[in-house]
Length: 462
Image 1 (cartoon, helix red, strand yellow):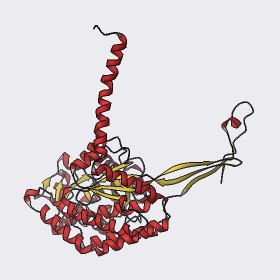
Image 2 (image 1 turned 90 degrees about the horizontal axis):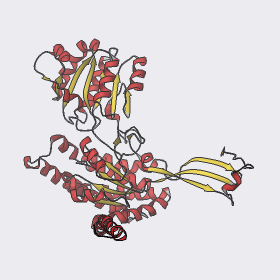
Image 3 (image 1 turned 180 degrees about the horizontal axis):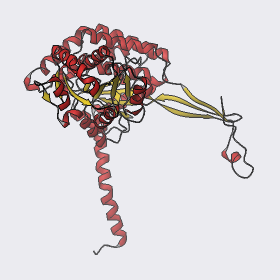
Image 4 (image 1 turned 45 degrees about the horizontal axis):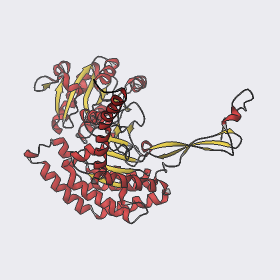
């Protein structure tokens, strides 16, 4: 009460500066940690990588593929240790996650081939999107450039480490990989092999780094000065947690609640093959079907044949009352929660719907905007379905399991975005670049184009 106004102002300044000083000290201590140092090095290495010609980045990819080939035995041995540990009851790792964790044989072979496939794809850097003359001698270009440094958080998916590291190299981006605790030993061997390959190239090994702890994840989310994009791969709850705890832009890869709708005019053979492939080819994948919708006119013929094949494949069906009326007893009832559940397992909820409109409404209410399919010989119905279903991938007469960067010809993917904003669906090279405007003139000034006697722009595309 007895302070002068000037003293009050000084006191307020001191109080308001205290949080800033604490934040500054906190950031300073963090910036000396190994994680921050890895991020700083990744940013420097990414700048140098982005300046390399496509031939040098392709040569680096070939060396990485060769190093991974040489490390196959070590990768598979480390993966066995991870899988053995995850299979223990005390580890608490769900069976679908254990299936995703397995990495060897054809899965490892295909991942390495994916690295090599990236070499044949067009260079994502330096693509001229716009070239426009604003006036004589004044030319604007919009050119693609790398994002910078990517922070990728994924669970028990060692193959993701291979895909994301290789995409980063091709697109000129640095990559900070944060794997789930279940995959640490496998990912360490993979990242070591990637770095070994890069040492023999013009790209720095610092362009890729591995994080392994929750504490490092927390630090990663604070690295706005070094990290340009966070891509969390996990549940919706996890993605929302990441979004709430970072100022860095987030590209969410969340649940895959995918649907297959068997229309009244579906071919029975196609419908059975597509629905079974979508569920059983790899049940723990995010593009596996989780809810089957069947038109009431097709239910009587389709459901008994489908249930028989599901029984042979060990798939558990959860039925709505109308589906149960067709198939009889012996099945569990689907609950309201089941319609929005990603099982990642040999489980499938089944609902009989009255028509196409009801099927579309169900998908848009309970789906996750990932991938949905209609099976029908009616082209008009397919067009309605594809225009009305709100998902990144909307298919006609083919399995939802095709939602994959490798199968799309992208070489690999960092994840599948279910956002409405691009990039959407499997995110490959084109989703890892942004653009920059280059304007070249010859002494041009804005004054020339302003006022009563303003010179007009030509705005001519070149």
